[in-house]
Length: 118
Image (cartoon, rainbow, N blue to C red; front, top):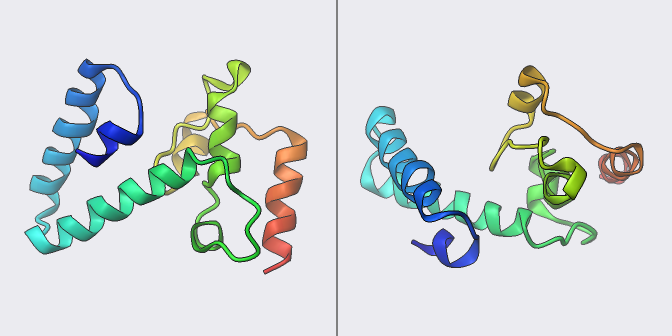
């Protein structure tokens, strides 16, 4: 429910991907209700961070843990980038495997600079 208020998508996509996808992943994974609360809350916070556009904090826990961050996701929302960087909310390997990974060299340099500063 929180994601519906924070992110925009078509109502059909919201029902199919967000609601049904969440329900199926909950049922198939065997998560307990408590675990699902933590997992889906974390996923919502991560999605909000990815859409915030903030990527230059001196210490940012999501940027320390995941290569998929707001800089990575900004490419997805550029007019020329709408066919790239779909991996939400955690891992970029799916984009690499499916050929949808794309980072302009300036953004890739920024990601590498963040990694070196840690």
